[in-house]
Image 1 (cartoon, rainbow, N blue to C red):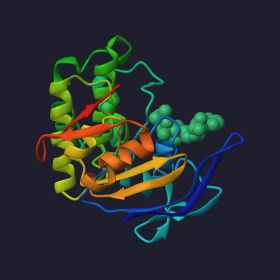
Image 2: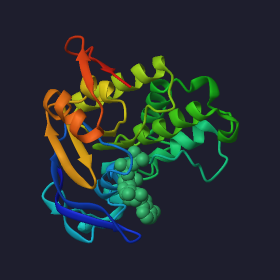
Image 3: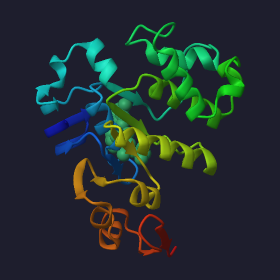
Length: 249
Ligand SMILES: Nc1ncnc2c1ncn2[C@@H]1O[C@H](COP(=O)(O)OP(=O)(O)OP(=O)(O)O)[C@@H](O)[C@H]1O
């Protein structure tokens, strides 16, 4: 389990999170939603152990996350940030192989995981291409493949679908669902509320650094929550698994 208890974070002089508590379980897909600036990326970074909260606890399987050794944490938690910056101009294949760094087996037993991740993100045809020569969406797929190649227990991804075309979005969602079925915890920051409702088991809605709703998608993303948190009059149309959000400008 990955949990935060009464967490507060200040960034600059502003509180980004205050009094946030949530416990996430492996085997589930959790979506974190909310308006711009609500604290979604900050919370994901806290779960990844990259931001230490000013107060409150971050727990990993019942232990304080800060006491989990860095190599074990790197093996357990795969984190994809919102920005797609890549420090070195390596090939796509080498970038994805970096996902095995915490395991130290890129040239050995990790080959199968690297091959699986390359195929899952449809990258085989561009394995030897330098990442500087990729489109934005291709770069996003390569970065996701690096996370998947590490076979982490937890996949924490900030807007992983934003740059992907429809077919690659659907393929990635299927892989993430598969990972959850195999026991991984999948946590996605999503702006697309229909996607969140259709693909998540649970939705955590943040507003102004606080939890505004937390529960099954149909409750946490009800029309009344959307009106209250986003200030948008919206109506759900469709059927389970295929919901669309109709909005009035
Ligand atoms: N480096 C920073 N320094 C100061 N304030 C920051 C910094 N990064 C974020 N903030 C502020 O912290 C709050 C939460 O930011 P965060 O990035 O977590 O929001 P978000 O919900 O992910 O937003 P978005 O949907 O726009 O990506 C916002 O008010 C933001 O302006």
